[in-house]
Image (cartoon, rainbow, N blue to C red; front, side, top):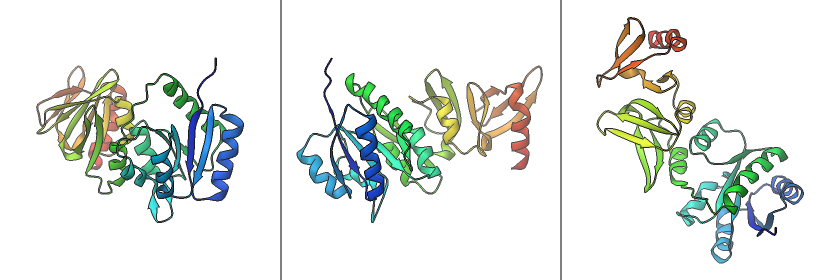
Amino acid sequence: MRVDAILTIIIEDEFESHTLLSRMIALHCKNLKLCGVFNSVKEASYYIKRNKVDLIFLDIELPNESGFSLFEYFPSPKFYVIFTTAYNNHAIKAFKFSAIDYILKPIDYLDLINAVSKFERLFYLNSIEINYQALISNMKIKDDKRFAVNHQSGFDMIDYDEVLWLEADVNYTRIHMRSRGIVTIAKTLKLFEDYLDSSRFFRISRSAIVNIDYIIKFHKNTSFYVTLIDKSNLQVSESRKDELLALYNRI
């Protein structure tokens, strides 16, 4: 069965990087049609406004600009982005938390194949709906006081100090807040565990992460549990008890 070519561009200023990526695409990604390589977001934006683009490989570290400035030109893009970046721990945590694809430089062809294969499955099912705004906000935040999460109508900024505890609900997470009640987010608890500061947010069981700043009491009866300032009583799994106590005693 014939499939439509995926119209692709690269935004990358380093000659060696975009030459290597172009060759890998030609060798390993037969459904991709490379339509252009651009050295800057501004240059690429002129092309995108005049031509259909399905997929963009975007370097986030460009001279005199961030790759994220692309979304200033296209706040609600119709295209999909696979980010390319040298190792940057803050960026990688943000990508994983936002479930956005990225490839580390120097690019390995297997990483390229995996990222493109994931995109192709969504592309040919017409099921691509990506909101990049929360990712962009999390990348810009430098003060470690808040984070951004997507929801159906946009995204929310959440202060870390507002979060009491997080509760697993299958593939969703319920965030219990001090003054905003409960916010339900379409992300697994594991994503929050990997993203949040582990010295402050501790996973006490398969179903809960607590902000240890808001623990007011430890209980040890037949089972071990904690009470938070909102009067929630949360059981701590046996395997996590000693680590929680050690962490709490270091504060």
